[in-house]
Every structure is written in structure tokens, then in C-alpha cells.
Image 1 (tube, rainbow, N blue to C red):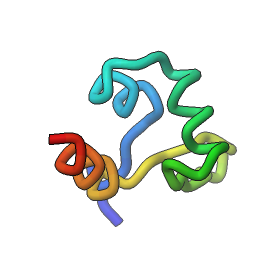
Image 2 (cartoon, one colour):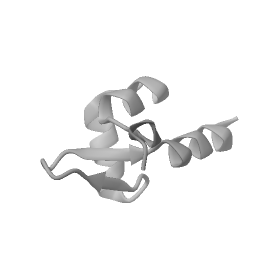
Image 3 (cartoon, rainbow, N blue to C red):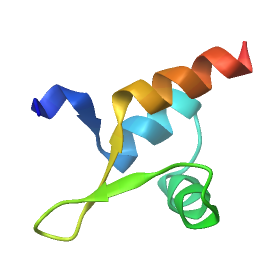
Length: 57
């Protein structure tokens, strides 16, 4: 999987114009699915984020 297929919490927060903590909260509530890296960091699928943006329009 290419690195560009995944987004950091900061990138997702910038897209939705919310705080990074909001992204973590959404993931905890199941509104976003995340992947854990080997270092324990969360990453989000770009396709899922783009689909959510389309739903908002």
C-alpha cells in the first residue's frame, strides 16, 4: 500500500477543519476507521475521508 493512501490525524483534521482531538474522538466513536502503524500511530484511509467529504456536500 502506498504511503499516500493513508492520512495522518493532522491531515484529516485539516480537511475537516477541526482539532486533532476531534478526529481521535470520531475514531473512538466509530465514525472513522483507523489503522495502527507499527509505532502505534493512527492513520486513516484517504478513500474513506474523501467519501465522507462527498457525503457532506
